[in-house]
Length: 193
Image 1 (spheres, rainbow, N blue to C red):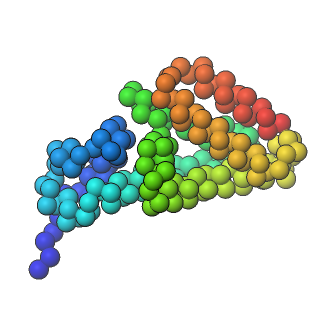
Image 2 (cartoon, rainbow, N blue to C red; image 1 turned 180 degrees about the vertical axis):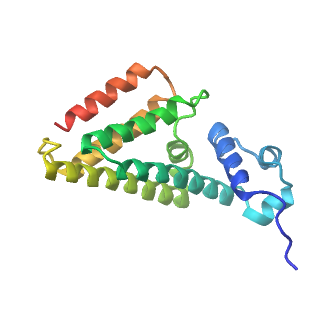
C-alpha cells in the first residue's frame, strides 16, 4: 500500500524556491532543505529523488506563478504601450518588494547553474522565449493599431524589451531606488514611439 504524504507539496515547493533563491543551488545543502522544508530526509528523497530534481520543480513552480500574472497583464485593457508599461512595472514591483534584493530566481539560476546544466538551461531558455514572444505579440498588435510608431521589426523590439527586463532583474540586486527603475521604464516605453 502506498503511503500518503503528510505535507503540502505546494507549501514545500514555495519554501524550496525561497531557500534556493536566497542561498543559490550550490550553497543549499540537503540538510538545509530538510531543516527549511520541515519534512524528513526520507520524504524529501521519496518525493523528489534528489536536490537537482527538487531544484527543477522549484524553478517550474516559480515560473508558473509568474507566468499566470504575466498573462493577466497581457490580457488586460489598455493600449499596447500601457500593457508594456504594466509588464515592466510588474517585474520591478516584484523585485523592489523583496527586502533581501535577491533579484530574479530564474536569472540567478541561469547564471549559477544554467551554464553547466542542460535541464536548467532548457527550462530557462523556454521561459525566456515565452517572455520574448509575449512582448512580440503586444508590440506587433501595437504597431498594427498605430499605437507603437517605432518602425523597427517587432521581433527586434521584443528582444530589446526582454533584454531590458533581464537588466532590470540584475540591477535590482544592487539598488532598490525606485527613481532608477522609473527612468528605465520611461526610456524603454519612449523607444516604442
